[in-house]
Length: 160
Image 1: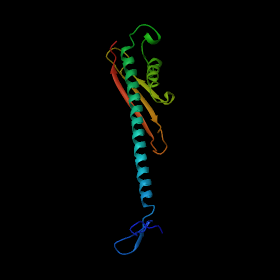
Image 2: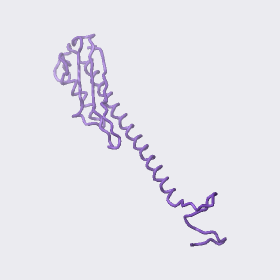
Image 3: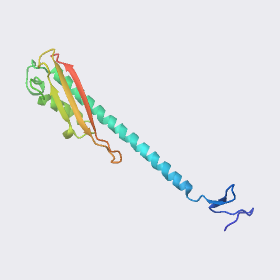
Image 4: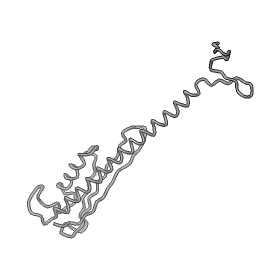
């Protein structure tokens, strides 16, 4: 056993108040490992929640862009393709394409988007249009078993 200049022993044992010798070796390492693990899990949870918020914002803005396109390009609009009317039936390809294009700018897989466009009262000026976008969220890390479908429905009134 190594002794310091005053004669006390260096080592992993120390005498406790009851007179017994207690072994403290490794306790600090165990405490650090537990705290470091919890800290890393909390940091990963923050990253995951931030990514989920990013994906939800992308889904919401894609639905808004689709609804805006649908209300500006009502059934009385003349032209064809992008300048033509949106509809008159449900899920017009022009609106679906606008939603898909807008969503592709975000961090999502646009092939997994479920886009639904409905005209409850028809496709004339003053009628509502509903654009619903659903995206099944997949976590970045498999440690957090989330199976959430991020959904947004935007409603607008056809003005042109």
